[in-house]
Image (cartoon, rainbow, N blue to C red):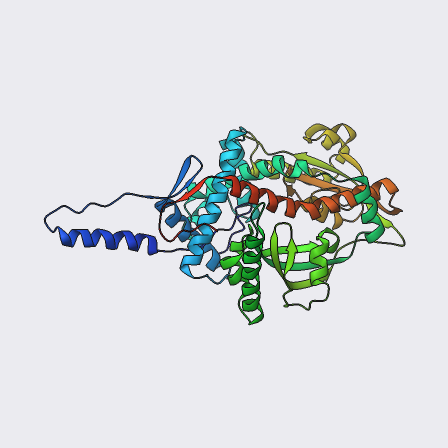
Length: 451
C-alpha cells in the first residue's frame, strides 16, 4: 500500500557495496591470522559535514529505506554507485540545513510533531495506530519516520526564513507582469525536470564541464532513456529522487525560461537545454490541461460569501475530537436545532467567531486549497461535512455568490503572488547551492567524490 507521507522528502536506493567491502576486508584479515579473534567495526565515518559526521550505517539504512519508497512509486533505480552518490549528497545538504536551523534556534517539539504525524495519518484515512502498523509493514520504522517529519518541518521553517521572506518584488515587475499576462492564465502543465547545477561563482571551465554533462544527459533522454531514472541518476535538484517530478504548474507561475522551452512541446517530449543562473535544465512535458479559473467577461471573477466554524487541533483537542465535535454541530444545524452564527460564536476557534463565522467575500486563491475545494463544491445555503485544513477542522457554509470585476489593487496582489511563485523555486535552488558550496565537506570512503 502506498502512503501519502508529505511533507517527507523522497530519498534514494540501497547499495550493499558498502557493507560488502567492509566484510571482505575483515575476511581477508581473518585468513591471514587464523588464531586471532575476528573483530567487526560497529560503524565508520563516510563524510564529515562542518562539525558533524555521516556514518556508513546511516547511509546504508537510508539507502534501504529509499529503495523501497522508489519501488513503491514505480521509479526505476539508477546504477548503485550513482544512487549512493545521489543519496549521500542529499544527506550532506540536509545535514547542512539542519545545522543552520539549530544555530537559529529552530525547534520542533514533540507536541507539534505529534500533530503533524496525526494529520498525515488522517490524510491516509487511518487511525494513528493503523498508520504506524502500515508504515512498519512497508519497512519504515515509525521512530525514523517521526524524525524525518521533524527534520522536514525544521528545514521548511529555515527556508521560509532564509528564502521566502527575502524575496522582493518591485512595482515595475508587477507593471510588466500585468502588461504581459493580463488576467490569470488558464493552462496548467505537468512537468518533470533534470537540473545540472553549476557551482557558486563558477569559472568558465566549470560551466563548460557542467554544460557537457547536461548535453550527455539530453542525448540519453532523446535516445529513449527513462526520464525519471535519468533524473534520479544525474539531477542535482531536490526532486531528483522522485524522478524530477514538478507536479502541475500554472503557466503564469512558471519562469519565462521554462514557458519558452515547453510552449511548442507535445506531451511526452523533452525540451532542449535551458540555462538559468543555477545551471542547466532539461524539461519534460507529461501533461497539459485547462486550469480551473472561473471567468466571466473582461476581468470578472466569481466571489463567494462564506462563513465557517473552526475547531483547532492542539495538545488537548485531537483531530478525532475536533471532527467529532463538528459532526455534532452539523447534526444540530441539519435538525434546525441551532443557527450557524450562534454555534460559530460559541465554538469557533477563529477571529471570525465574533461575527458568527462570517469570512466576507472570498476571491479564488484567498484560502488554502482544501478549504477552497470544499467551498466551491457547495450550493448557497449548504453546509459542508467537517473539512480538514492546516488550521484544523471546519464546517463551511456558502451564503451567496457573485461575479465582479477585479479591482486594480486586487489584480496587483494576484500578480505579486504569481511573481513570488515564479521566483521561489529558483531562489530556493540558489540558496541550497550556496549553502552546499560553503559547507566544509570531507569524504572518508573511496567511492565518494565531490562534484
